[in-house]
Length: 262
Length: 222
Image (cartoon, rainbow over all chains, first blue to last red; front, side):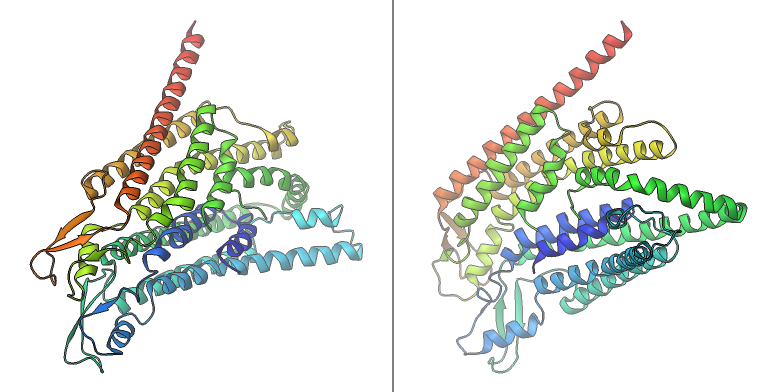
């Protein structure tokens, strides 16, 4: 279970996202997870080995490192990325539940069910309406909360986003005050600022998606108020008929856009 | 999520590229990303451990290393490769949008063959031409910016054997010796040369697209 497995899981959710959601997912995987794996992990790789203190006192270096770095940046980012990705699974579960219900209807031989076989139900792409809208919007809301909480935790824990070259430590057993030098502080500051910037872009994308969904919801409501019940049923049947073709078409879009396979 | 996944993502874009674009993508993956992963990362692997300073002063080595190598070459190349690859996704998004529009027209009753739509290779015309051309333009800009950043940060492309350091807490001036300077210089020049080739390919592709559109316009008017 690694970042690749997360990529596979979230790729499945991608099918049911809005366009902004797909852009957010691309930014998450290419500019955050990939940067973390190919670059940032190497920068922080030797953070404790090359944390040097100007003392021969045994244990002082360990204690000072632990005092100044309670949780390493890398681990905080990994946690942030996992927490931020996870609300999308709520959407995946909701979609799975709907498909399960439709399969149950189909198996019972319900005449209301419009599908010709189980394969169609499995491949169907649901539109973001009704209860799925609430789940999707809730997941975006949680994403925003998690991003903000982790950015604040970073700021609070490390007193800003800059990595200092020198830290003065007087934790026991260090004698008096000892100078300790951090490994690669400039490179670490650059990557911290980069990751913060991309987090902010992701927050903006999530806010934009939330606004888009709210606008769509209110527009649909005002349209519904003007429509008759009969016309609504007729539209539903047309939609499900057109849904038969959606998988073929959306597959072609999937492969072109970001190569996520469900 | 690693270079292999990036390859999978960009592979999809390849279908809608010109021939020069396909060559560019091959050069990118084989001569840059692969060289970075199988060779360059090992050369720079021990860069801080084997950065040795002629002093016993604790902290001096750390500070001198940080002063002379604010961002390691390897990380700069990784960022360069990611930024240079990303404009291709603009093209992918445009293609996806065009297909979505065709799907919408199909739903509204127009006769379009669905199988053809799935496998269709879109020609680089109209608004797609503009998206494709601007993605090449951004690629060239990113390549140039990173090449300049390299030159500015490291005062040229040669890795010196010896650097003289006076940053606190080093006493007076201290000699520090870089690990594998010749091998690093070789790889820096190689990566620079391949960047140059990629820029040439991008410029050639840009010229090809511009000429193609000008010829099409002149044919339309005659």
